[in-house]
Amino acid sequence: MDETVLRALAKWPNVPSVYGWLGLDRRGQWLIKGERIANPLVSAFINRNYESDLEGRWYFQNGPQRVYVRLEYTPYVHMVERRDGDLALTTHTGVAATQVREALIDEAGALVLRTDVGVGVVCDRDLAALAELLVTDAGDPADESSLAELASGVAGRRLHLLYGPRRVLIAPAASHELPARFAFMLEPRPAPGEPDC
Image (tube, rainbow, N blue to C red; front, side, top):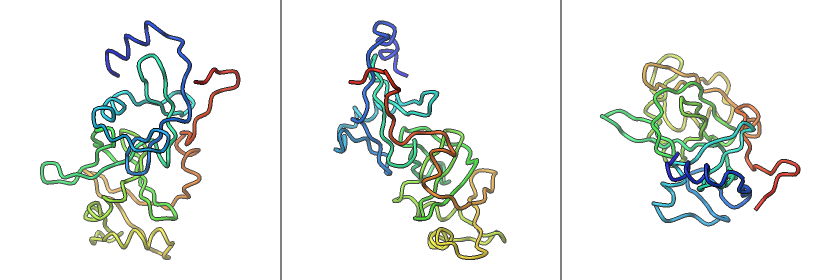
């Protein structure tokens, strides 16, 4: 968290939280009241001060005030980039994921990864690039269309994601079950009696 944010928290510890204004879409874009934030400095500030509370509500700490985030899908969006010749995952906040611990595919073909950073959907624009890390049970290369087949429930089809030294089985999962499974709230609301701006 930024030093200026920490100082503001110490100075004004009881500022009411904000709900319903800030959102995160499936491509890692910040939205205010549904409109994309175009200023890269504002997005970078939000990224640096993005965290979750004990109830699984994700928020941006804006000085002394928490601005809770409406999640379109997951708390993080994983982007695929090439680093030192290899494909690597980075969250929409710019944090590199070094391990993939779990890989899931939902009924619509979205790939959700639980990494050492946290749980996030892979940006749909990056699925084709990630396909080079997919292999079958036999270790043969797979492709992006294999993910679609897996999502549609093709019998007997199993795919793995090779990331670093690990080979992670991609399992099916229902999108509506992800918030409970990974303990996050899609649309945070104030607790009873909690003030709201």
